[in-house]
Every structure is written in structure tokens, then in C-alpha cells.
Image 1 (cartoon, one colour):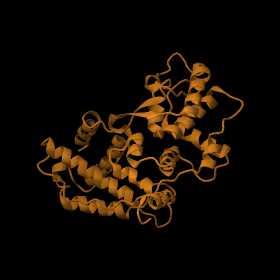
Image 2 (cartoon, helix red, strand yellow):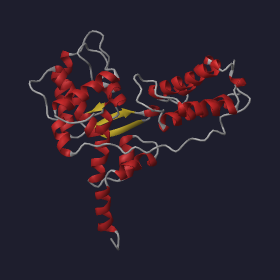
Image 3 (cartoon, helix red, strand yellow):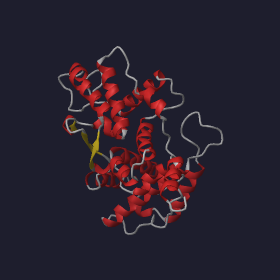
Image 4 (spheres, one colour):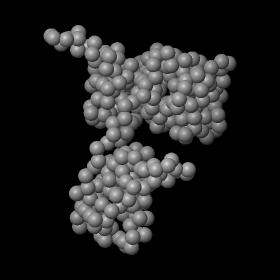
Length: 306
């Protein structure tokens, strides 16, 4: 059963161009199902019936978190169940298209309604404190400053920041070419402050971080290598603590702040969609929920009976 999952992952990687994170998520979810199926006496995918899938999904709904210690009376979230069903449906569609299985037994599985989480955005005061440069300057602090300024100025994902290559920067023109989900490329403005932070880092900081085996990534850690996502994430958390920002701050919050602040200052939702690299406008529409005052003002201004 594992080999068929590996074929599916190869398909995601080479034909669908899915991100590594999506591949890892689907792999973990499908291998979890395989372990359950083998434990239930199922020897191959042809032996899986719809009632097996339903029973497995019901078990997922009732299963407590695997983190230890688990919160009392905790269950997997709707999001986790949603992803489990989505992974099975995608796998079976692939297997049916490639004639690897006689039928798509997951076709009847319905996806639960996803809970729509409203993005958390920092206010402008918190952003100002977060982006206050650290003194005295060091190569690492200059790298951090360039990362943070770019994250807020251009709304890049954490993976896009860690994978950004030198040739993708077009600082003289004030743009950066970003390779996002599904290997889709977009061009995003950088802005003056982020450009200056990047130029300072590239001229003073990065040359002191480069080693004999350093890659062409823009951002390098202290040993001259490519950042892992978790390491860069910790840099965000450390700066938030230094800035006195309460609560957990994630890199994605700067992306949310980028989009929310653009909307609040009158940017068109379609433009924000393009800048964020969202495939669907429905993904971007969540930001309309975090700027109600701005939308109310626009309604009053432009509607005949506002």
C-alpha cells in the first residue's frame, strides 16, 4: 500500500507542482490511514471499501490529539478531519485516473465545512515596534531586519522567504520575483524601507555570512547555510519578544498584516489576491472580515443611500 502512496506523491511533486509542505501533509495523512488499514486486516488498496473509509474518518473525529500531554477531552479539529478526507479523495482520484484502482471509493466522502479562521494582524504601532532595528548591527541582525521588512512590505510566506534566491531580487526596479505554491511565479513590489534594509544586508551583512559552500539563497544563517523554516520562525518570535509584543507572533501574521493594511487603505481585493499569490479570490476574501470599519466607510462614501 505504501508504494502506491509514493506514486501519488511523485505525481504531486512532478506533475502538480505541489509545495513540499503539501506533499508532507498528504504523505503523513495517507501513511496514517495505511497503518490503520493494515491493523484492520486490509492487505492492499483494492480491499478498501467505502465503509472502511467511513469507519476510519469516524475514528479520526473521535481521536484525541497525539501531542503529549493531550488537553483534557480534546479531539482532532475539524481542520484535521477535513485534511484527512481531502488527502484520501485526492489519492483516489489519482489512482482512478491512472487506472491503478478499479474505482474511486472515496468519491462519496463529503468534506466537512471548514471553520474559517480570521487572520490576525498587528496594528501599525506593533509593526513599528517590531521593525525597529536592533543595535549594534551584526550580520545576523542585518539579515533579520531584511527578512522582517520584506515579510511585511511584500507579504511573503515563510517558505518563500527561506527559499528566496539572489537572482529573484530586482531592487533597482523595486520588485522581487517570488516562486510560490505550485511553482507559480509572481512579481511583488518591495517598497523603500525594505529595499534599503535588503541593500544594507547584501552589502554589509551577507558577505560576512557567506562560506565556501553557501547556497544562492538571499538569507543565510550564522553558519552560512540555508534557513530551515523552524529556525527562521524562532527569529520572528525572538524579535517579537524584544519589541514587547504580547502573545504568539508568527511569520504569517506579518503576511496578514500586509494584506489587511492594504485593504484598510483602499487597495482593491483583486490586487491583494495577485500580491499574495492566491489562486482563488475566495481565499483573499477572508480579509474583508478583518477591516469592517474600512468597508463601512467605503459603503457610506460610494453607495447612493449610504
